[in-house]
Length: 225
Image 1 (spheres, rainbow, N blue to C red):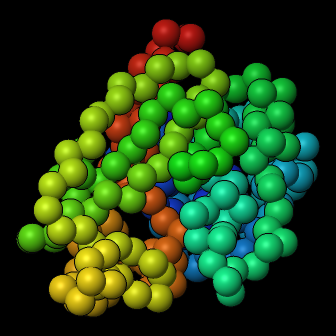
Image 2 (spheres, one colour):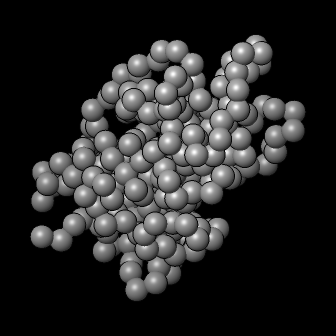
Image 3 (cartoon, helix red, strand yellow):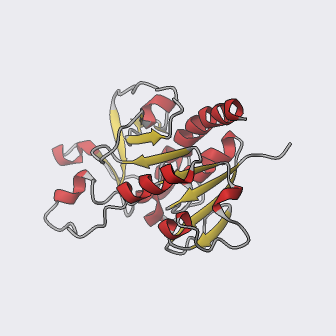
C-alpha cells in the first residue's frame, strides 16, 4: 500500500520532514535556499509560489495528501528584541495560512510561541525525554492545524536545560556562572538529529514533534478517506 504524500514547505534541513517520514509519510521538501542535507526529495523554490500553483518538478500540489509549513519565525522570536537583531523579517505566516486553507488539503503550521496562531498543541522536548544526560531539551514550538486534533503532551520540565542556538549550545544557567557550552555531537543528540550542520540546528525542530503530529494526521486522513 503506498504511503501518503506530504509537502514540506519552508523545509530547512529536514527536522520536521524526518518526523513525518517516521510517522509513515513520503515527504517532498521546498525551500527558497539550497538544502544539501535535506534527507528526502527536495526542490529549491518559493513556498508561496508553489502554493499558488508554481513549479515543483514533476509534481503539483494536488498530488499530495497533506501539507506542513514552517514559515520563518524570526519576526516572532523572543530574540527579535535583541539590540543587534534585524527588524525587517517578513511576516509570511498569514499569507501561508490563507493559501493552505484555500488548497483544501489537511495542513499543519509550525512556529514559535508568540506567533499569530491559534495553537492546538505546544510541543516541548521534555515531553519526549529529549536531551543528554543531566540536561533536557525544552525548545517550545506551537502547531496549528486545519481541523484535526493532535493529542497534547504536557511539558515535563525538570533540572538543567540545553539550549540550541545554531552556532552554539549552552546551559541557560550560564548567565549565572554555573553553565557550560555543549559540543555539536551533544546538541545533535539532544535534538534527535544526526545529519545537520552546526548552523542548521538553530532553525530545526526535533523530529519527535512531527512524528507525533504525523501519526495524528495519518489517523485524520484515514477518516477522510
